[in-house]
Length: 376
Image (cartoon, rainbow, N blue to C red; front, side):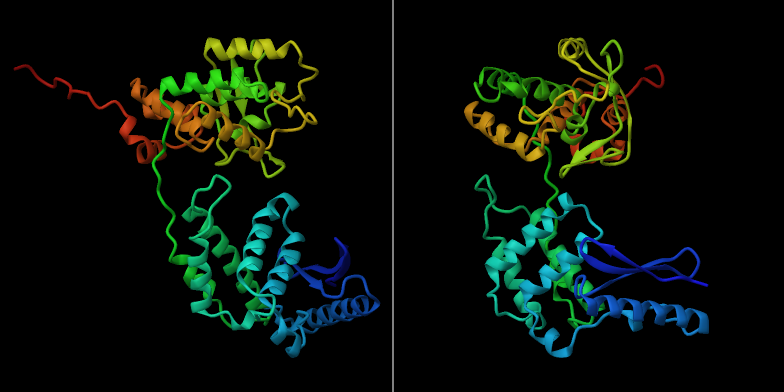
């Protein structure tokens, strides 16, 4: 007989069962840990078990969901709905990954009055919110990118889709509005060789940020993503410090056991980077120790922290602003300009040849002459 379990998860009750074979189901019970919630959970668990036994199981799960009263649904505000959705996501998402949801909620609070009802949001209202986002600026004083705007709208679309399933709203205007924002295909803006030297020397001489000089050297010298470097340990480095094994990535406060695109591999290092690692290795405590620990607590350096130093250094060096990710495009572009095979570069930087041609075609050596197939 199929058993429906009543479990506690982050201060809420949850029903869990597997049916049909191999299909895992979960429903959260409103009301926290109250006696009413416990009684509701137990009754609903018995109902599901009985339906499975009698052959009347609702595979859509609609019959088993805990629906709110019609009056409560009608009065639910935009802000309250978003808060409910974030609470729902918190049960299945790491806290670090909730940051973008919380950032979206903050924008919702800035735009919508506290009294605006969720069911009143239509296509016109959603479009006005989109247009308002386009007037905002980021921490660098630049307009929000289409990528950020689209992400905010997609989160709201996901929230409303969830609300549709929960019978809170009957339509989702955010889906259509989010499709009107196209992600800009911006070409990489690599640093020139002169700018590379200037960035390194500015880091090196800075009284506050010289600590990051070796990290910047490795980023520029390998073209690795920041998240791949932030979580490197000495166990990822060969004994002679001539190779690094990229297998994982650090993002939003957590380390993933794979890289961004799940491509891993050993990278052979030039002499300068090998010597850099040999110097740092003198203070190594164990294979599990980070190559570049935070100066504050010895943990991984967060990308926001590094971005803050990067902004200051580029401004101090009087270099046009690029995102920290430009360390990657700098290495790839320079290597291509030296005539290296794109396939080799793709392998060494853990990306695809297609991506190299799409984003770096302008850097590929173009003074190539067709081969002689026959004599004059």
